[in-house]
Length: 219
Image (cartoon, rainbow, N blue to C red; front, side):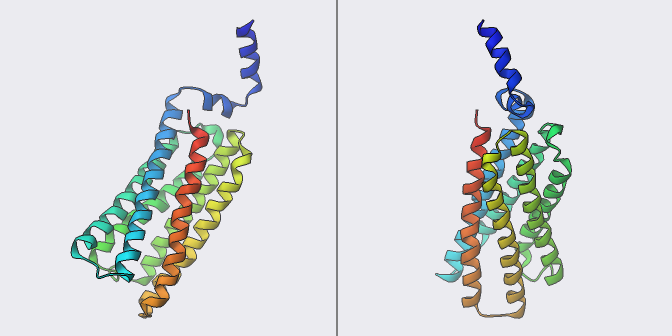
């Protein structure tokens, strides 16, 4: 009798809900990808917080100058690796194109983060803006992937958090472009600190929202 009720219960679930309750390799890799992505976001947030503190509050020590860019680069590499693991989601999610676009954008951010070691003007303004545009478009595509995944899992109640990620990504893009333009024009730091502070709020909110979404995949 219990077996019959269990079978009936399983038949009432969508394919996404059944996948979430299973123990497949696909689900394990997806959870690993979410975990890596979250850790990468936290590292990037810490690096940005460090830059804000040392750049605008104190003399930037030579050791910190080396540590913070490495932290940001590692964070972006971990985000990219996490995105690659998410290709293991079921094909029914209909998200491969979104994930490819997101991965390309995250790789562009890795390139941008890596060139920081050669100075802010190494890339030139047009290329720097293009790489940042690709990176934030990657975040937007990633949020759309999360939307598809939530719909597949029958968790439309969590979609408002995805919209929060979308709004945050757009604000990142606008703030980042404004910062690049102001740095290229040589405007004073007091203007930059306002933009950077607003972006830092977004950098804090993004992993918080993502962590909340990650709990949907919790065992």
